Amino acid sequence: MQFKAVLAERTRLAQELHDTLEQTLTGIALQMDAASKAMGTEPPGADHFLELARNMVTQGQVEVRRSVWDLRSRALEQFDLPNALETSAKELTNGTGIAAAVEAKGMVRPLPEIVEDNILRIAQESLTNAVKHSGAKKISVSLDYRSDSIQLQVADNGRGFSTDTCLGPADGHFGLLGIRERVTRLRGKLSLTNPAGEGTVVQVDIPIESRPETRPPATEIDGEA
Image (cartoon, rainbow, N blue to C red; front, side):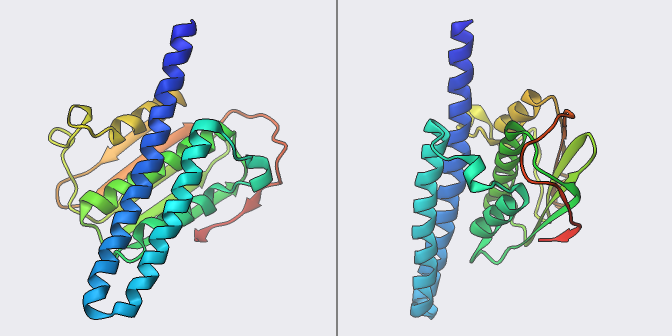
């Protein structure tokens, strides 16, 4: 039992470190590329992208500490999943020419911490993959709060890919595996639609147990963030 607990914790930490570092490093690289391009055409504009990269380094340091030591208190932060998704989308796509939209609908409310954390990481990984590999110009992220479940959908209009030929753990790429493991851990369902040349849709459905929550009351929203 102790071995299984240690192994599960190591797996969790590996996933957290992969998700946070992959997203942050991708964002930094994109901002540095944008700064390099701006230096040749509009040097003053490069400062903006460099400042964004600096901010992402700082945020990445915070995320790594949170993942390893759980130093941040969600209660004090008043964590809000739709806003966290919007922030992630903006950070990843800023300066890339990719338009990202975040939408939340249904009875938006606080969910169990483990569900919110995993939904956020799944969305971040899906966004990172779309930005890095799809060649997309548009990415849409939607959260559908239902009475007994929550559905996350990340869709892009990129080139799509084949799950038979895409890189996996043997090639040092653990993103898709990590998503599947998170969905399985939460007893959810994962749907991946990716016809070549027609974009990719990642859809995750996670069941929600009915139990009292002690956080702020729910609010109803329906529209793009």
